[in-house]
Length: 185
Picture 1 (spheres, rainbow, N blue to C red):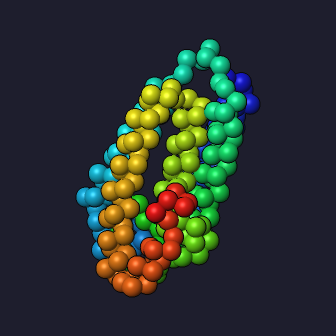
Picture 2: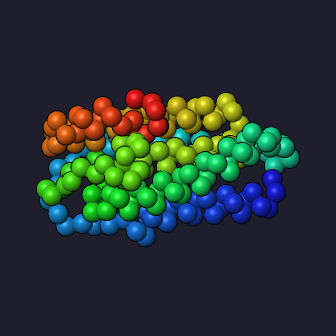
Picture 3: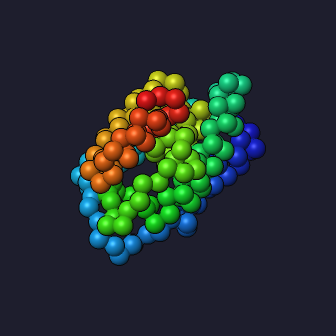
């Protein structure tokens, strides 16, 4: 792999991770309701997906094809843009575990007007970025399956909480906006 691709890969990951570590509010002291168990199960599956994508990598001497490089060059920036805009629009509602604060608001602006869970969309994009550069197809499929399974668990947990708090407003939003892949309901 060329040094330029490695540099781009590091830049894509750094741009994606930065808002979660340095822009998102952590350790908020507000009362909340959580779905911790489902979140942790889903997160464990998502982490397993990333582990597979990183662990079962191409040997260095296997040439990359143009399609994989194009997917890499498209998915990396998309991941970063979604991460930054999602954290910005979510603001004080940001949290790792599925939950609602007492003063929680239903966010439907910015990337949330395109998909209900743009942070998961960004996670999927950075996973695809990694897979397109490092992961053989058979392992990419396994990794993608685990990621989708974990994400579906987390989406269901979050959406149950949102539906319980925001009722009909959330149901309208849910019917009009895809979960985390645009145009897929």
